[in-house]
Amino acid sequence: MSEIEPEETTASEVAFDGSLITVRKETVRLPDGRTTEREIVAHAEVVAILPVLDDGRIVFVRQYRKAAERVLLEIPAGGIDDGEGPEDAVRREMVEETGYRVGAMARLGSFYTSPGFTTELMHLYRATQLVPGTPTESTDQIEVVTLSVQEARRRIGGEIADAKTILAVLGYA
Image (cartoon, rainbow, N blue to C red; front, side, top):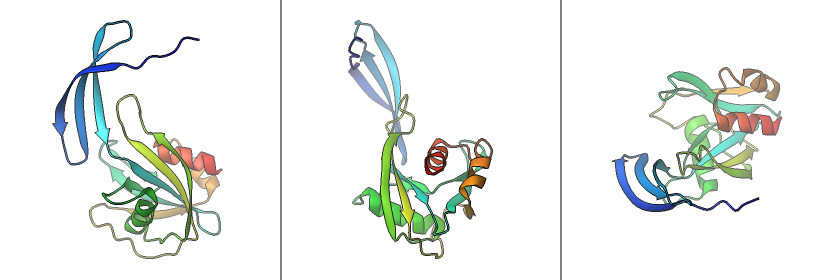
């Protein structure tokens, strides 16, 4: 098996610089000497949370996702703010999106959401010993939904259609 060599970036320009993402157009030299273009969406690291109630049900959020142009049922997730670590972000996002306060958490792993075009690295945690409360998120329309793992599995491919949620549900099941 031959070694896979990295591509060398020979030029990079910002095509778009927004509040959530930056899009870079990069010229790269391939190992065989040819050049090609890559479009990279730079995105900060994020957390995703598999919130499990004492009875084993999972806490989800139902919300409209403009990019998908539909309502999806997802596990809570969000960005890691400046000065926060992933565990701080888990606690904050849970209160913002679901109202639940996290009593305990365990890191399940990290993964790139779509490494073909984005730098986004997602840290997945299981949250337990949840204490109910009132969500504090004011900019999104979010409905909190609890489902058994069996019911969640039945909704995969329908209302549950995003990779992080499918990964979390199947991993938990």
